[in-house]
Image (cartoon, rainbow, N blue to C red; front, side, top):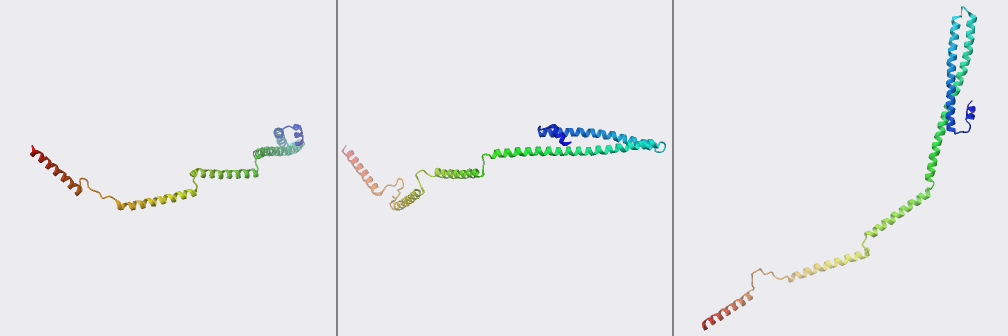
Length: 216
């Protein structure tokens, strides 16, 4: 029956075909359930007739029991068919889920392949090596920019030695110059020799003034 259902749908989309097959199977199950309900009612009715006529009308009771047995056989067959259909529905649903899962995995695998199409372990290693090389170049450039232009370490050491020599020379000059420091003379103080000369000049001027007044 399953092969007939699948051949009925032909080579259409498997996902859609599986869904339609499940719909057909469920419709068949509903029809079987209705038949089972109808047969069960007939079985119950025949059993009731057989019980009612078991003593008073044995032929009628016997006929009712035969119909009951026949309907029970049909009911068992329908239940077997129902079980088969339910198993097919479960199988189709599981297969459909597996198909959808596999399709999703294939799409994911293709997406990964597209992402990695331009990548490889060798290319990644090469890129990382180039990054390390460029970092080293950047560090070297930074170091060169940070140092004074035109002055290397040898020149720097020579300049520091010359500066130390000049400092020693300046200190020596300061120590030697301390012996010739002039003595500080307080303000208003006049040396004795200069003071004597000043007094002589004043006396001479005074005598000259007195002589001029006497002549008058």
